[in-house]
Image (spheres, rainbow, N blue to C red):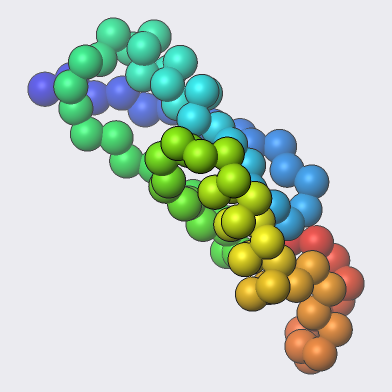
Length: 86
């Protein structure tokens, strides 16, 4: 069984959704893989991976607005908040 590993660094500018599907697709294609298992590990305390089909461009806007309401950019009511973006 062949195994491949790589590291993706996603440049971010604060809270938001960041698309990196093309980076992953390019890497898989460069490995010459057609069938397999892909594991993505997000090594950050306040980040997560969201998988959605992107069939409708409004979905990303809906998600952005949902997360903005769920977790506002400036959460001054939290005692541990120091005004820094994660």
